[in-house]
Amino acid sequence: MTFEQLNYEVRDHIATITLNRPERMNALTKIMERELRDVMEEADRDPNVRVIILTGAGRAFCAGMDMDELEGLPPDDIRAQEWMRAYNMNRRSDYQTRYSYFPAVQKPIIAAINGAAAGLGLVMSLYSDIRFASESAVFSTAFAKRGLIAEHGIAWMLPRVVGPGHAADLLLSSRKVTASEAFQMGLVSRLVKPEALLDEARAYAGNLANNVSPRSIQVIKRQLWESPYETLGEAVASANQEMFYSIQSEDFKEGVAHFLEKRPAKFTGK
Image 1: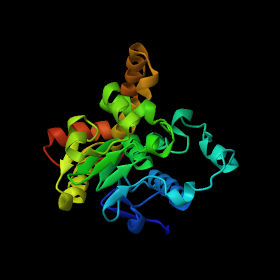
Image 2 (image 1 turned 90 degrees about the vertical axis):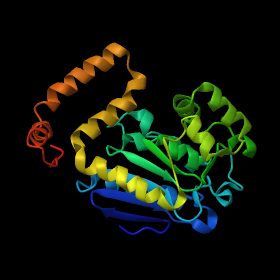
Image 3 (image 1 turned 60 degrees about the horizontal axis):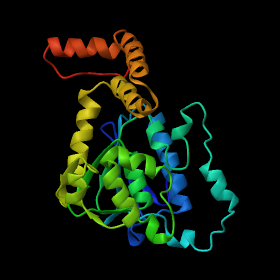
């Protein structure tokens, strides 16, 4: 697949998606938005891909929606209404809206946040499973400063990541948050020197791709994203059912065998 506003590379079971409008700080356009969804679905379908890294070219991760796209947008824009609709009901509808589809991707998504992540850039990083950040990264919700509200589920996601107090602060003030503060509040899980960010993300992704069962990862990701909708009893019951299936899998047999034989694992995802 070829793309106009992003780059896509698959190597060693790792798909790297790079938002590629560095001259505009990777601000999101309709083209980039469509290409990103297409490439995420391509990576999800590809049996050679086990982990996905999302990052940005240049000095920004994603500075939000391109303001040229927003200027003159009428309130009753039919296209905007269509983008908000859930449309793949074979998966949980909560994770099928315009930007909330990352959790529906079966492979883990690592956001390697190399610079500014504002507005929709922050939204995309929150919907990723794991967030690594450059020490030079800066975060902002941005919406209130544009006369907008907490869009695209961020009022649901952000408190679950950083807690309600931090979420209220970030959403109401739209202030800029440094990488070190983001780390302290749990917005990101790891801080990395700017020049080492992608290497660190790829090393972590490589461990997932080569030393952990792809089948286990797929099930665990689904459990993590579905648990907010379950009671404890429901979560236990569904886990017990998944355990029954797991112990019959080829990856379980390999998990035991490589441990006993003291050799590297050769998981197949089956």
